[in-house]
Structure formats: structure tokens, C-alpha cells
Image (cartoon, rainbow, N blue to C red; front, side, top):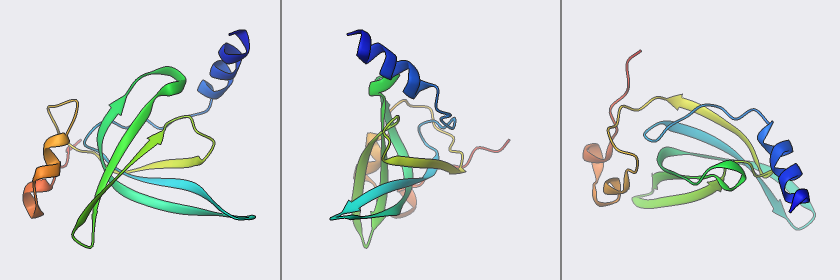
Length: 114
């Protein structure tokens, strides 16, 4: 149990950008294919953040060729290299699962003006 706590403390020290549900983010993910590694970008809207601490995850949704694609990323995973915030969204909910049933402009999140 102590080993788990030390791993948790060391991984939480890594700088995590501040982003919330509704933001459009670009996630850099490390992909292993056999003996090769490459970095793949996944850009979309954050529709959920779950848990806290080491086990925290966030779900990113985008529409690719007319099909909705969602990926769940562990926030403190070594495979998640970088999270860049593209634009801030203005939402009033903690989870945006209702976007799954919307299409086109109805599935857009308004931009937060600062």
C-alpha cells in the first residue's frame, strides 16, 4: 500500500493543464506498434471527467466521417504525453452525455469569452 502511495505522489507532481468539461482539447497519445512508437493526436470535446487522484480519467468525443468517436484517457498515464486546450467551452453541466444524441450545429458547445 505504501508503494502505491509513493507512485501516486510522484505521478501527481507532473504538471497537468487545467481543463474542464466542455473544452476542446488536443491529446497527444503514445502508440506502440510492435517495436515502434509514435505520437497520435486526438482532438475533441471533453464530455466527462471522473474520479480523482491517480485514477482520474477524462472522456473526449469527436465526430469522424459522420461517426461519433469517444476515447477515455487516464489523466496521469505515461502514454498521455500532452493535453493542449484549443478552446474553452461554456457549459452548465458536469457531464455532457446529451451531445451523443445531437448532430451538426446542435452538438456544438458555445465558446467561453474571457
